[in-house]
Length: 462
Image 1 (cartoon, rainbow, N blue to C red):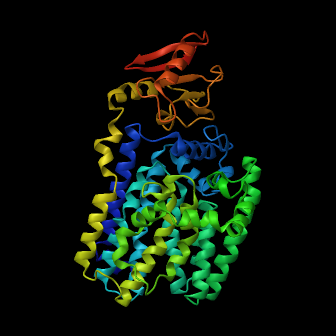
Image 2: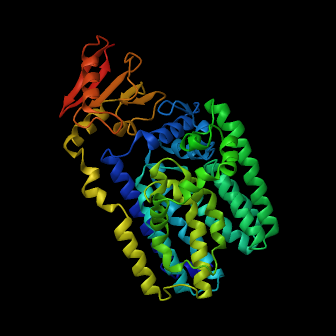
Image 3: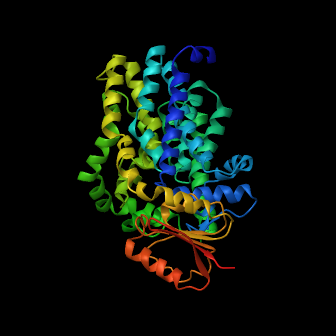
């Protein structure tokens, strides 16, 4: 199998994709366009784990396990032991998103399609716009679940139970909500793929982890309900209440399902592969239904776009449906050239590569000043700064970002205050930033360490 892979373009495709994704996410970060939410949160947590400290995020104000019960951050801490840098996260993300093309290739081959069609389907996956876009949106642990879901499907089809279990456990460790994916995947495998032991294991494992994560781990480490509950307040204030009201209040649910926003979302989600989706075989999509429904029912619009990570767990099941339809000849496009051209068109229209010539250059006029100021933060002391700068300084126990909706009353608890009044940050504004600058100037505990291009660095006057 490996020899065959080495003889086709797949290895080069994966390598090139990894390189491009890593360069793009790194460049965005270097341009100060990454944020406290979520890169700063995860970088701080992984750094603290690598130092043997409690991974308590002062940005999020909770233990990292209280966020989404994602224990996958603990093994990531081993990378930071080699050398603590946020670029490990970018590398892991780029590799995870790209290496998923390998199980796509294998799934296409075992479906009875040719090697050229397998390469084409791998390219369809790599060109799916969300893969490129989510790589630009900081870092999220569910990127590691994507190749694991693909691999889990392949293992089930090939009868490799041990590796199937490994991949399911890996998926569950990336985010608590993915347990719903695993349960649905188990239903599909049990009923439609006739993989009894695989389906039963996935269903039981998903249910057990969902209960443990949502009712024990997250409440213990956060002191409340899972963060995602706030996105469905119209259905209830807790996971059990939301689940009950989902069935008892169908009017609320159907109002969301049959809406313009849902139609728009489905068009965005399906259009890159619409040529390969037909009623002939859509059963693999069962595995993605729970996440699809959560995105549709959410009160926040960014769960229904092709920029954020929320739709990632749907992709493996969508791709499997396309592969099955292609194998059955029930597709609109059959020639590899036309399929690739359609994928390229979808990428050109929906991928956000244009941000590098527009949005990501919005603070370029203060770029040098911000870099110089960051370099002057030379200890692991506590920092108060903007959301965009914070992810460059998260290797410490205490860091908070400026938020105009949460007025910062006590500056004395910080050793460094780094502000940019020209570009005050995504959660701030110029008025609030200037207020903080004046407050720091009038505080006898601080002195101005650096000032240039409306960038101010204050340090504790020891």
